[in-house]
Image 1 (tube, rainbow over the protein chains, first blue to last red):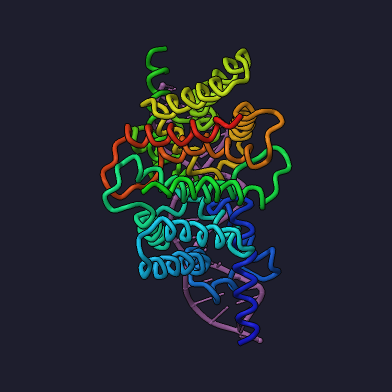
Image 2 (image 1 turned 120 degrees about the vertical axis):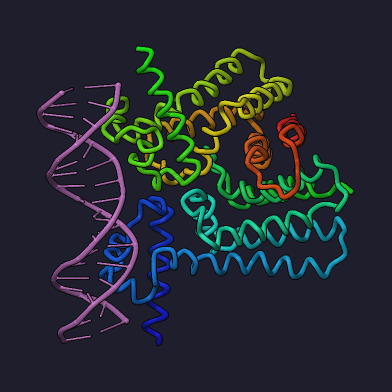
Length: 184
Length: 184
DNA sequence: GTCTATACTGCGATAGAC
DNA sequence: GTCTATCGCAGTATAGAC
């Protein structure tokens, strides 16, 4: 039991690392197995396919968004609630264990196009965006509030030349996002 | 001559279409050839490799950014100049023939990770971002101005549930971006 | 739970005829 | 300029021993 959980976790960790390093399609199961010092066949004991590894990686992330949705739906639709949505989304994003998985989805959208978890993710994101503006908001306001959420998203992966800390990125992103979701 | 140019162009068009539809790695030269009604070998007459097709696609896009850079470097570093940079960037992005190629680079970052044109693109983008804020700007201001350029970018590919027109996206993105590059 | 061995498929790329 | 034919390799996945 213990061994199984450990090996499964190790596979996930190494797979994610390699997916981010070289891209999803470009990473073969042979490479993952080699890095772990096992054989390809061993991977197939823990996961039914390469896609199944992705699905397992996505679980936590989907749970994050769902949790925010569940909370938000019990709140009044105010500017304060919208800001709190953004804050929670941002905190999830910058939590140590989510950054890598987020980058993976961010950078491999097309490769994962037909993967069921990606559709689910997209769906949840759109639900979340819908909560960031008044139901009768103008198109421009709707786009703006979407950009608020994506600013948080983007800031985490922005290529920046000089030494800017994660804290500074986060601060700037939140400032921008708060502004963008605050129109009445 | 005429035939050669035409076939080359047709290959580029079909390749880009399929790359966007299924992802770069997942699109084989066989599929591209089939779609065109020729064989794989024929492609190799026009392009030395799969990577070479990508390089040919990137040219116009790199030219766009370089053109903005060249112009901006002859201008005073004012807020007005920064806004004009954003405006030009936005116009390029929304021009009919660039949307597909932009989406391609946007969605296949990891797969194209080691491709030389991507490094070049990244480099030009960072040069452009550097022109969007004062040289002595604070880290938060630097992140914000980056987000301005990114907003224009993101708005073009934002998944939106309801019917929002390209014009509305563009308008909202420009409004946001202008605000973000306007701090003194 | 992990191994060896292997089946099968499709890839990018090349050689050489026409 | 496009073809047929083929090379060498790597991919995912499975069967069955231990």
